[in-house]
Figure (cartoon, one colour):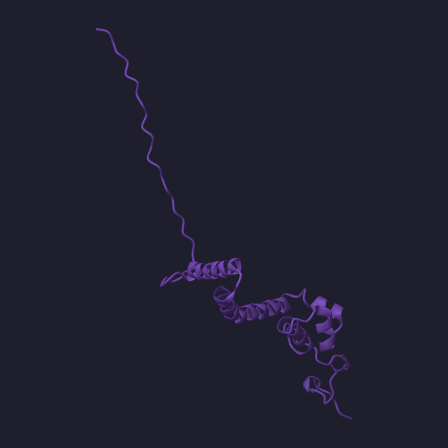
Length: 158
């Protein structure tokens, strides 16, 4: 007869637990991996609707919808969207340049030039030419000069 010690319980078994075996492709706690990541990538990079992305990734639509309520999933989703917007920026500038050069519609040409100027102005506002952006807050206090009191002289008869 063998006596079990506390250390024997910590030795992993060769087979996963029933719960672990039942959910294949499940993300770790606080991570976006497996089917969830595949569904989010389909939504962001392929433009799939949520229901179609969930189906293609092997998830139920309600599971994906519930996952999108979690902060770490939203952070991953928003990060991927930011990467998509950043990667499309250069193409959009070239497209606007092509419209400004080649369009037969004068209004479209003017609108494209205006859009390019707005993009350049916004980029300069964020960084400024040669400026270093530092965190902080600047408070400017402007004090006005005091208004002088007017003294009405009275004439005293002599």
